[in-house]
Amino acid sequence: MAYTQDELKQQVAKAAVEYVKSGIIGVGTGSTANFFIEELAKVKHKIDGAVASSEATAARLRGHGIEVFDLNSVDSLDIYVDGADEITEHMHMLKGGGGALTREKIVAAVAKQFICICDSTKQVDLLGKFPLPIEVIPMAWAQIKRELEKLGGQVNLRLKKDGSEQALVTDNQGWILDVSGLQIKNPAELESTINQIPGVICNGIFARRKADILLVGSSEGVKRLVY
Ligand code: 5RP
Image (cartoon, rainbow, N blue to C red):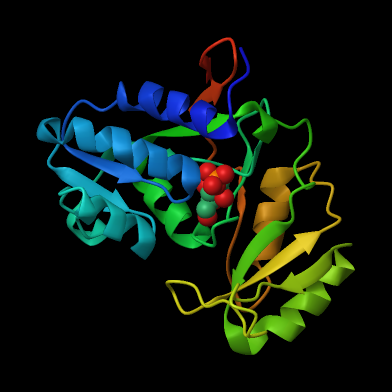
């Protein structure tokens, strides 16, 4: 039987909620994470609350009556659950399609386990087909664009979807550059290289803090990979 992409996302969201035991849960951003929030709401009696990786996720959690904690009030998180735009067999990810990459990386850094939830279309041999999102300080974007072009990328400033031709502004008041044409053979090295460009807030390569558990939705059921 063929499943829709949403059904596969719901399937992995249900599988991820089995890892929810107690305490405070780190919650990602995006359509797959939204399915996870729906499932988390069903077991909210087991937890104290959640730390959100974006304002959108925080609003959604609160809408389900789940308390949202400031990350600074939390010493550690057992798990962080989030989707990805691409993931390799080494659990390196490319993230930020939803523009929340910086907070996602921060919350993931606090968590003992990163549980990545996605469907099989996100599994790749090499990162970089999906344009790499980079969050930047707005006054530096043109200079950062030139530096990224030297690395072989084609750079587009992400715009609001309202047709206004204005830059999309993130929760951190940053802008997002989407970089195509990169073949990311050494993700950890490129993650560090891009972080060294002045004005870069964060880039969407998650290689230094990769996923620990991958749950992939498929027509044969949820596949679980542990690295
Ligand atoms: C948001 C992200 C998301 O995890 C990524 O874009 C995947 O989103 P979706 O679950 O909607 O496919 O990194 O910044």
